[in-house]
Image 1 (cartoon, one colour):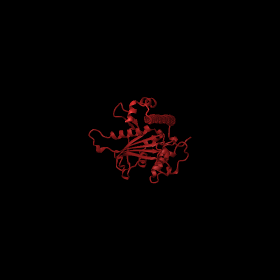
Image 2: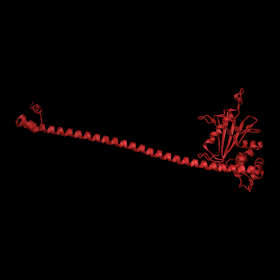
Image 3: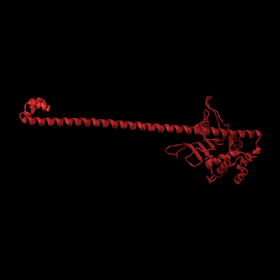
Length: 329
């Protein structure tokens, strides 16, 4: 029998952070890029379902949604499997929460920032070892110039190592809580037991605190995660094979285009060679004819010198009577 349940599960995550305000406040202050004078001190829970402003549009649900005394909204989600669509859903939820703050007659100055905190039990950034990603609105040419109204935080839990952060103790403790506690945990780390917030969070996820019905739901959650992971893996493999096939087709098409281009070049070279040969043949024939003509003229001059009749000279040289007479002038 397990001592603890995994706090990343839907049931346990919502129970810890969706029913205990003091733990949610501690979690937000530890995980979000808040200034020292901007720490969360009080929250009220809000309806997690973000209903669309039009009946034909899609409604979405986050795990935990709350607002602090300043009016800032916090959307918190625990995502077990990464898909590209998840980031778009996060952006959609954040923009919904941001855009619906004003009623008619309200002022734009009353709009408060929205923080979307997303814990992902998967990896999606292969280009970096960093596990903490803070997306915001900035000037592309001057990244230091930002619009500090919306933060989309993504944390890749598998990349987290306890030594990753030295200056934010509570972040480390909460991330250790999420990554080190599960059904296999026989003894919780001393650091988590010594801190009042993580110690309370540990008590909340003790298996003995849950009913049989809740445990059935807990097991069903992990079955669904396993099924989804299998389906996502199958889709990824199919997409990989499809991409490989597309790459192969592209490679074949590239080689075909290269072969066609080479064939065109060969044909052009052959045509040029044939033209050169025809020109050479014509020049040879012209040279031959000129040589034969010169020989005939030379013979004609010799025969004229021997006082041979013109008709005889025409017969033996092939020259015309006019050509021969021109030699007599």
